Length: 165
Image 1 (cartoon, rainbow, N blue to C red):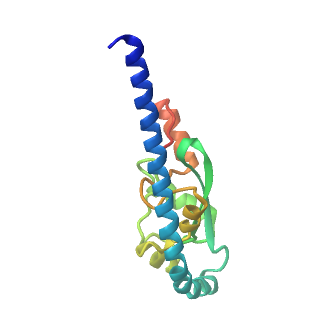
Image 2 (image 1 turned 180 degrees about the vertical axis):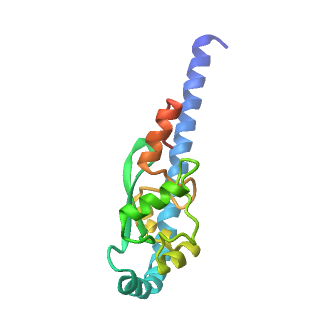
Image 3 (image 1 turned 90 degrees about the horizontal axis):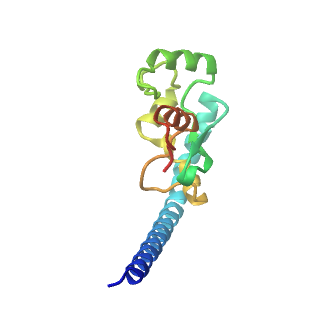
């Protein structure tokens, strides 16, 4: 084969690979939407009473919003149930004591958690509002969880590279 034929074949293979990747992403998106829409009514029936109890016991706000960096460096807001006390200064001082590796790893017996917050963390109920992110297309049910924006910035500063999916 001559060089022109090799270049054409290489371009065709690149195009096919891109087409396959787009098809894979579309299939993943369809799977995410189908599963999220099937699970959501069941979760609403279970979580509605829990939300009412949580509002009575822990008060407002019910949700915690966090800026995350997704595919292609796009920022979006992740929704979670609030599991910690509503005292930012106290939480930051406790996290400063626990923060040894650069990321917040908080044991569930820490005083920063509310009583219901511990329960929500233990059974991963805290993550259920992220189904809204899945339905919106911000994230997928399967795969890596997006990092908080501040951690991406820290990693970029340390590594000198982009820390996005």
